[in-house]
Length: 390
Image (tube, rainbow, N blue to C red; front, side):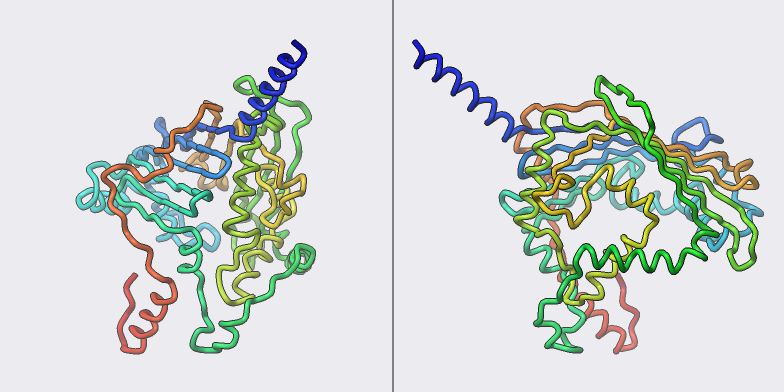
């Protein structure tokens, strides 16, 4: 009798352990972007994250509504907004004109409704595959992750300095990047403080959202859109608030996924044979205001986090995110504010079917060109007096 109880308990423990170590996880978020001068949202979207210990699919379904741009369609007499030229702002802000024409052309050649569709990225670390597909042209890219990284690894020294091409470029340590970024940030602060201010605080009280308790954060950024060389201030305000839940059942699937990614990609992927090109984006990241860095790392771990560190194993589930962009007063009367939000509407531990990690039936595969061959073709075209076309 005791043996039977022991076996029953042992089997129960094994079952729980197996369920825990192989849990699947799904996040479904829903959101929209709107302008306060318009009655309709500019964009509605849903984001699905489907996660297993070795696979991840992120899919975004979107519906774009050009009519929701409201007062931003009329840009007459606005002059310039800081260093952003009027034509660039017009293209960004008025799909009712140029952008609508572009979308119409896309619709004639690709799909009947270019304003609505979905895009997906699938990473399968258990069999070294990455798949990217879009409903716009019904095509997909499917490659070995390792081969894709090799194809997209830029080698500027292939002809210029073959020895440098053969040698593996060294990498800075985390301490070196942090220090270098802090020095550059401090050196630039007399200028950046006149054009950019950031404030971050953790909200004192927790909040329960969809039955999950979350911790909140608020980030405020003030951006001076006036010409800094002329003095004065014309401030745009960006206010963000987000709520995160931690230590939820199924979070271990995300940690295991990160570990699987490390085995295939490595902790620090070197995208080129140039140390300068590899390190520049990482140092530029460290140059960002500390409040922005702290904000980022409430959601995701640092890119160079060690696999056995608490930050690597920490998982934050986004429960809700809100953002309000308030332009300077002279533009607010015409445009209003831009408001965006995204909310968790479903979190599931149901087992995921293998088919969601495949390209949809009927989609055509297209290859990824070798980036170094593309640059060589561009060089030859330039030497021949021709303008290289993308």
